[in-house]
Length: 94
Image (cartoon, one colour):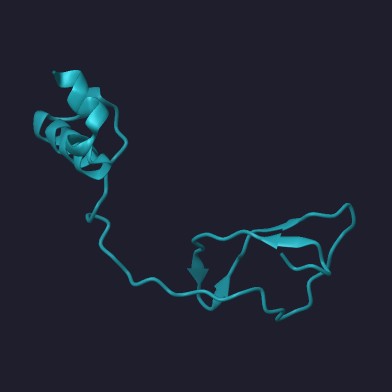
């Protein structure tokens, strides 16, 4: 938090357009706050471009999925949540 300005810079992932990044900042005071141009708010790392087909799970309703897509969705969720290793679920199967 920038103490003298009572502002909070939200951590997260931001989109870069050209050489400009718009950052989400909350004013935690009851007065307008003005940040000086080129004020250092923190550091950022640029992500590498990746294919949209990697680790994506569409959000279509189950009724619109083919059997293969439904199986792929179930497998993906099971692996991501490590359901096979969950001791509570193992006890329920008994």
